Amino acid sequence: MTKTFINYALALTITLLNIQPAHAAININVSVKGVEGDIKNNVFAFLSIEQQKKHPDMTESLMKKLHKKAPYEIRQALQPFGYYRPYIQAEILLKESTWNLFYRITPGDPVIIDNVEVSITGEGRNHKSFKRFIEHIPVNKGDILNHEQYEKAKRLLQDTAISFGFFKAQMLKSKIEVHAKKGISNIILNFNTGPQFRFGNVTFFQNVFSHEFLARFIHFKKGEPYVVSSILDLKNALNNSDYFESVEITPHIDQAEDLEVPIDVKLVPHKRNKYTFGLGFGTDTGFRGSVGWEINRINKAGQRFGITLKKSEIKSGVTGEYTVPLKDPRTDSLVFASGLLREDTKTSFSEKIFSSMRFNHVIKDWRESVYINYEREDFDVADDEGLTTLLISGIRRTKIWADNPVNTKRGLRLCLDIRGAHDSIISDSSFLQLRSQLKCIRSLWTGGRIIMRGEGATSIVSDVSELPPSIRFFAGGDHSIRGYAYNSLGPEDGNGDITGGKHLLVGSIEYEQKIRGNWSAALFYDAGNAMNSISDTMESGAGFGLRWKSPLGPVRINLAFPVSEPDKGWRIHLVVGPDL
Image (cartoon, rainbow, N blue to C red; front, side, top):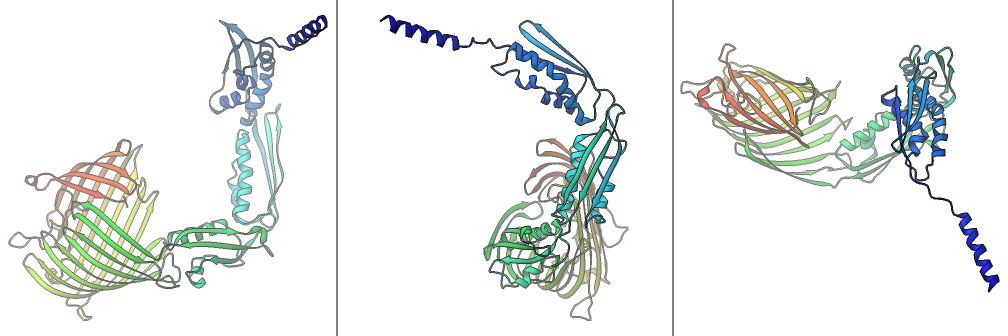
């Protein structure tokens, strides 16, 4: 009994001796003065006391140890920004159960870069990309030493090497020499590019198109220097071709032989048949709808066929197109089209059967279309009725510069078109037309845009009444002079009916300001007319509107007033679509 009691007491004593006394949590506040912004944030990131002040095991003794260590940590935090000679005052004060730790920092003069020594050796030492790096290196003599910019310079060297196929490049030496007492530093970068790899064979994995057709998407040749951007261009071209559901390109650098990199391209084609349906509304057209069917591959050469049926309150028609990709499928094609179009407005009626052939290609960022149209049009406009046959040839050039083609802050669209026909070649009459369209968008300040639009056209023809309404010019409508109905402006006959004119001149200026979220407000002024003489009367309209930025482009609701004819009252215009 006694022995058992003694053993129990001994065990209890040992247990009690091993129990540590509990700590009461202490409150710590850390304050840093003398630096701001990124430097201050970095100081807090380096301070151990800041990181551990809320730790449950924090004690007064540990706090004082970390406080004593803080000046060293602050010096380390300042060095990446070039401050190697700071003066630091550290204080500790207990006030109302809170330990206040103060650090007052005088950074001193920063260390200045005195010399930057960049040595590039290897096959790429004279490559233009590395010469450009040296010209635009982010660290320069006279700059404040900044470790982040130094690291950026090293990354740029590595990225440049990879971008241009120097896959064995190595940084032989990278060093910052700091002479803190003198306040200067030297940067040394010694980089060896190694050899430049080249493009090897490109293998396509798919079973739909011929290799000859797919190879026309490639803008590099076997044996040419490897450039990453060329791989990205190939991927974008295949994705944008609308032939494929997915595109995966894998360069096998580890399988390169004689520095030639084999490239695998895995393609998953879209379904052969594509169906489209559309519904919409515009003030000019009223409610409209469309149905389309496209066969996106007739054969292994990528030829395709599509047919579209469109119907609105004033326009309807059916059009079929057969497209033949040419030498460069991304830009060049031959398109054969045929269809029936019908337009019935308050000023004219037209029913046209047409067949056309156009050659599309790109010249120095200009999209060019050279075309020949055969048109047979039955029309009624004012007192003119007729049935005309025209063989029209023409060329159209379009160029678009835009930071975003859907919701544009800065952009420009220019379209030039020249077309004509001659009565000695199938046509019933002769004419020559020149037309230009310009739209410019510029941001003025936060949320503000100015939008300018202009259109000018002229016809060389002996008698405009010989031409069908699709060749004459009219003004008015959503994309012309707002405040007037679609095609309601132009020369008039003796009965006051609009006949359409030889010339067209329309201009517009609009200011748009963001008001909240995706909503903006706009003020605009439009002026111009369709005419037979430059001296004819110009009409004008003005108004205001709301804009809503949608994924498909801005939705524009405008309330416009016909300034030239105030008795006609206000008119609502609704337009949906991209800026350019």
